[in-house]
Image (cartoon, rainbow, N blue to C red; front, side, top):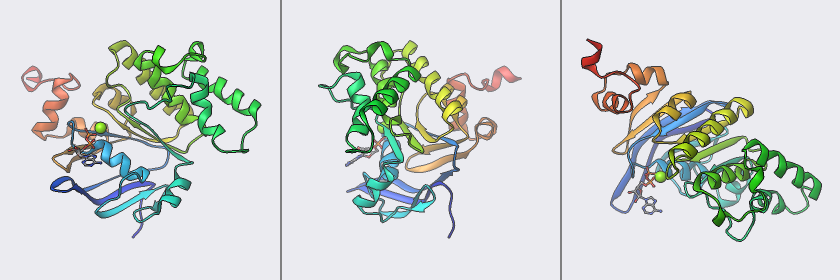
Length: 255
Ligand SMILES: Nc1ncnc2c1ncn2[C@@H]1O[C@H](COP(=O)(O)OP(=O)(O)O)[C@@H](O)[C@H]1O
Ligand SMILES: [Mg+2]
């Protein structure tokens, strides 16, 4: 059975009696951006953790970089995680390290692989790219949530990953910073052209980014396709969702 670059094939995942994912299938190709949407608690973060090997599927197959990772060991996932990285919902920066030290951390923890100048250059370049250069010597506690999010993205990019997963990059951030973080992610897609998956409630961001959209609903795939297909679909739940965010006109205004 062949597969795509990143793929869920009939994936099921339960926690005791809580059947979170029930036969979930979707894929993205190399260089594409997939967007996962759906209500809180529907299994979006669980899906990303399955792809990273932080959780294991009960049934189905999971492909990452075209490889079947379903039964990979922790050691094999450590190899994968050198090229496949995740920006956590919490940001998860080290509180006692400065911004620059946080971004340098993944490279420094690789032993002798990078020399000090190389790390310094890379950190400078990333802080510039994410527009957080002026915060390089600050501690995370001194930063706004949106700035922390940008630093977390810089750190995730430190080792030039092939694949990036973003877990709700714009939630819990004030609207102005959310717009800024959205712009950064859109720009990263355009400049770096890395394969990525973005979990988001932000339909406007989703529309800008998505080559393919997965809409999870009650443990199943409510929709999988391109954004134009989503806008054209006649499922009332999905239409309602798009109307709410004014992405498509309400029915009565189209008459
Ligand atoms: N490690 C875990 N152990 C038990 N239940 C979990 C675990 N991780 C997630 N869940 C449950 O799985 C469901 C989906 O969680 P999650 O993927 O975090 O939702 P969301 O779509 O909001 O990201 C929730 O009911 C959550 O309580
Ligand atoms: Mg989540």
